[in-house]
Amino acid sequence: MAIQNASRHSRRRHRRSGSAAGRVIPAATAFGVLLLLGGGCGGGSGGSALGAASTGSGNAPTDGSAARGTARASKIPEATTFTTVSGAPKDPGPSSDGTPGGDGMPGDGTPGGGRGGLVLHPDSATPIFDRPGGRPVATLPARQLGGPTWVPVVESSGAWRRVLLPSKPNRSSGWISGDGLRAAYTPYTVRIDLAKRRLTLLKSARKAGQWTVATGGPKTPTPQGRTFLMATLAPAKKTPSPLVLPLGAHSATLDTFGGGPGTVALHGWPDTSVFGKAVTHGCVRVPKDALRALSRVPLGSLVIITA
Image 1 (spheres, rainbow, N blue to C red):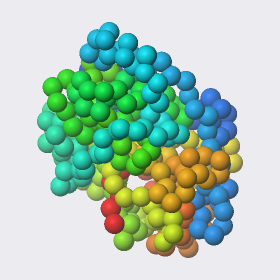
Image 2 (image 1 turned 60 degrees about the vertical axis):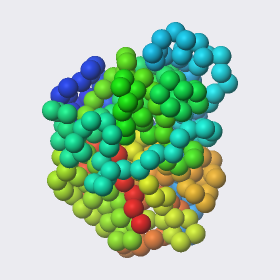
Image 3 (image 1 turned 120 degrees about the vertical axis):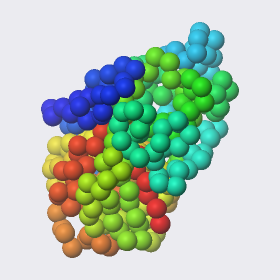
Image 4 (image 1 turned 135 degrees about the vertical axis):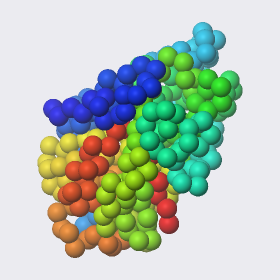
């Protein structure tokens, strides 16, 4: 098993170090996760996406025992790629440069010194609220798809952190207490321009790479909005892609695909003629060198998808 640890996140200004920041999980073996690529989000050629077993849940502290008790007693879902979180507030949207806003950090993506993308990891399942101190709507599990859960912070209010969720509906967010969570900073942001079919990787607000990619077709478009890199999976079958990078977003037109929940992902593709075309079932196909660069991006890093 290949391991990418906390070095993928900035180690500067951690509350607690994120020791398992980005594992590459063999998709056909680890924790019952199975990635069904088939035609790999392919328009007209079949297959795609994500089929996996849901992980277990627990509870974790927020501000105190009252919140923990509420989370235990409530019949609320886990916030995973397989669930729908009713009552989750919609992501208010990125700041003008697409980086997190409202969290007291200048959004230039530079780690440390209050600059960069703050990401959080719960050691155990943590209640998610519709507002600071409000109503619990879900729990955030410690693991997603066999690897550690890392979610991006997009707003702060005192000790509370608004994070993006991997659940349906797209652009779901929620509030968690920042107390007791592992924190890290990522200098990376991924931008996908659907009109130009172009993916740009930014590191510390500077271009680290740019590639022409394939995006969703007219009837199965790639969803727009702000999401994040949720996991890194290594399929047992390396074709059409040796790595698959699921995002915290889902197809708006396909409720399920390949047995999974219609999760959108970034992945490679052997036929280079597809790049520059809108031909997939919603995933984004990228060239080999782009996939190699993206494999180094820490989990929880923002992905901004625009028309």
